[in-house]
Length: 402
Image 1 (cartoon, rainbow, N blue to C red):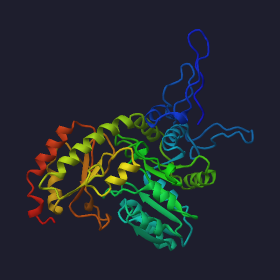
Image 2 (image 1 turned 180 degrees about the vertical axis):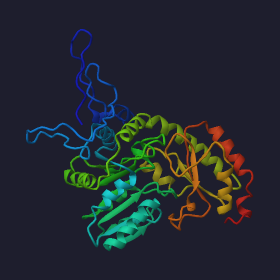
Image 3 (image 1 turned 135 degrees about the vertical axis):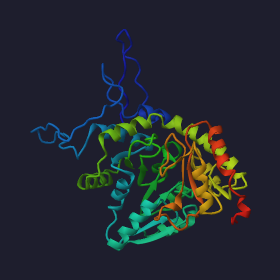
Image 4 (image 1 turned 90 degrees about the horizontal axis):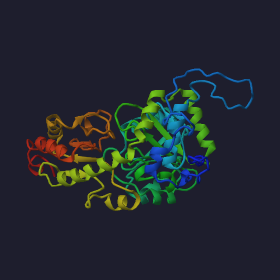
């Protein structure tokens, strides 16, 4: 990215140039990237451009947008911000799954892919469907086992890593994996849970970073969008992903782009608050007799704590708890009133659900597991609501837990 233009003081004397964007911290980039040029009377935010058709030019090589499926200033502004945060070049899509499909389109017939043993059910289903159609070989691996990940990736066409994983919260050592992946293996990292404020996978050797921008980047549960980020120098892969978007029509909506960019402006403050809430709740839930296990890398006894402390700038605001069985989990989510029963995450509202209620959820996810997306409410209100709901449940050790 280029540096912002020099400004002038009230006497007309040019002031010193602003710092280059490359030197700005992520919290500042979240606010500053994707702004329109600073000219008199320009809007502070890039306004939504509602256009299916653009006026063209007869001049060859003019770089005009051409058609509404090929580009939009609203997309470009959001992509500039996401790319700046991840340290690469971004493309946005109509959803996180549309972005995931664009990545899977890079796999040739008969190729092989390595997936987390526990990963987002939509990705697992998409890979399974593609495997049956195109003869893909699928291997699964525990992403927390670095040696196993590197071994599984040997000779594979693609390594797909979530970290932390959805919904079991395993943490991958991205720098170690990135250093160990060799050859032609395409290294893809889903960074939805951590956000670019907590980790930037491109700096650890990832070739593509994926976001369900519906979640933390948007932050308000009112826009569906996906994003992919590649290194700035990787023009070939960028063009391939862009071509898939054009040909398949998986373009983001104009208003969705505007809402996601507006959400990015408050990402840092939202994450700080939500993460602090999650840490308090995780500690208290870990002590509650009705809870068998809390999966949160911020807990000192969590299996992912040591790696997360080393490779992430924070532990995030997502956690999962395990109750004795399906009935206990259903009773908890039914009894709460402040927490919202919903199948999404990353918004300002605290949301939770029993993940195995979905028929497509992986069998490795315990029946009594509840994924919790902690929001920005007052932590004592969130705890009081949970404590009230937990009060009706028997102690885990006597309710079939182990």
